[in-house]
Amino acid sequence: MRISIRVFNFVFNIGRRHMATLEKLNINNLALRSLPIDQDERVFPRAVSGACFSKVTPGPLDGPMLVAHSQQALDLLDIHPDQVQRKDFAEYFCGNRIIPGAEPAAHCYCGHQFGSFSGQLGDGATMYLGEVVNTKGERWELQFKGAGKTPYSRHADGRKVLRSSIREFLCSEAIHFLGIPTTRAGTCVTSDTRVIRDIHYDGHPIEERATVITRIAPTFLRFGSFEIFKAQDPMTGRSGPSVGRTDILHQLLDYTTSTFYPEIHSAHVNNREARTTEFFKEVCRCTAKLVALWQSVGFCHGVLNTDNMSIVGLTIDYGPFGFLDRFDPDHICNGSDNGGRYTYQNQPSVCEWNLQKLAEALSPCMPSENAAEGIKIYKAEFDKIYLEKMRTKLGLKEELEDDSDIIESFLDTMHKTGCDFTNGFLCLSNLSVPSGSGTNNKEVEELVNQLLKQCATAKEMATTSKSAMPIQQLKMLLQQHPLLLASFGMDADMIKQEIEKAVALEKLKEITDEEKESTDRGHWMKWVTMYQNRLKKEIKNDCPNIAEVNEQRLQLMKDNNPRFILRNYIAQKAIEKAEKGDFSEVRRVLKLLESPYSEEKLESVVTSGASNITDSYFSRPPQWANSLVVT
Image 1: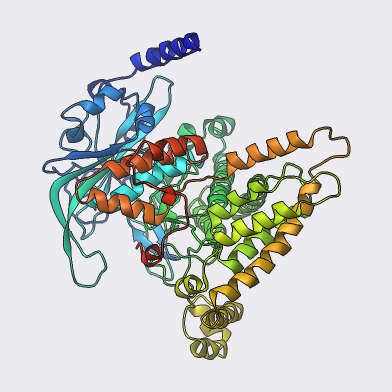
Image 2 (image 1 turned 120 degrees about the vertical axis):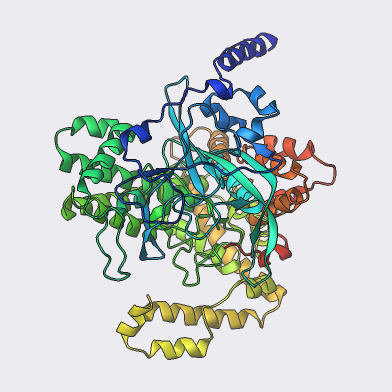
């Protein structure tokens, strides 16, 4: 064992020797050499035509201080851990000092926001710094968020505050360690500089600390990057700032495919239509995988506009995100999403819609029938990966045709009973595969009791569930002309569903917790019996060792069902401490997020902290958390 540790340390230290100081990072800014840069370097709100980037300068901050850093993210840049201890580290990672070789710039892009084309948007609070090519030959773009004004800031100050920065910093790393493609967060640096924010939009602004996070990704190009060439939109009357510049579209496509899809580029180097088509198909595949993985862990992005969709299939731009607590397919994590466009269950269809908008942006280089092929790939790939992932979460290794039925039935039962999404899946590992044709009634009863503990009370369900409007108004809407409903993005079926939801909500207000638990028990006994019958089919006739099957199944579930996720209330407690100058909870939560599937490592992090820490990190959210709203 001692020899193994010595060998590990030797190899580890050899790797560290190749890591760099901030002054010696291998910066190679290919994007700025490949794409047109705005000739006007003045920073004021304006349309930027004929360019993909505008040169900018980070604004200075007073008294910068490091809140937290992810060494695993910084390792991508070959930044040695010793560099974090430098007195001037925070100066470099808030923008007060510029890393040698960096060329700060803001990216120009457009976007469809909540279904409508908004015209030019761009990096209003973020800045490209440069691209680091590490010792493995990997190219990583380095970016600041919250470093000051750009030509795309409009009437804002280009700053971010501590609370939103902590959320993005933590969630970027959380999603990575859950095994989902994402941009990374290297550092979070706050300061003594204050900015004014009206948190609740109620006319009571307060001063908050200006904060900067470092983001890392192969690229931050997004669907909206290709929408700067869009002609005037018939609904909004807006157009892209570089409409008609097909030459720049070709330039952007060439850069994107040659850099991030080199196999596609080289295979179709002399055929732009084929190259664009294959590129679009691959984006569809990447996006399908991304959304399927989101759904499998209950992650809701919150703002799935086309300007927040990565061209390489990454989770990008963390704002009013949220993980499901109580399972609700209609869950809205963004308090500003009044119409429920970006609910949990809508995410797959919204991303398909966004892909259609990307196809429109690429239409000068790709016919519509080719785009339709890409959309078909998206749908098939999503269904395939989602089903595969949900099977593993249920501990099912055998692939049976009706598996989607038991998955949907499980989700429906969670919805009816108000069961916690994450913990509900965790409970299932307590039921073993039965031997022969028998059943284990004791295990079934114990599992049902565990699931009931994860279900919301009648009061919780009544207070957290809500209909879009009162029943009478909904019934009046149902009598309106279909075209009128369509103009509001509705149809008769949607109204009927809302009426059913409103009626169910009224009934919830009338039942006791005891009555609800009795009803819930019936729902769960029915499903667990169905589940146990499905588990029997995991045993083949020639199976010699059921214990081994159970062991493999248990490991499969442990590897695919996280015990720890970044619930809103956990992030909020870390934020509240940080706002008082105590960053320890942010760092502890980061450490927990680094091992979401390992019970042993999670327990080690918890027990190494303060003695008053309990299992609250892993339980259903407390009652006060139901009132948290993120916009």
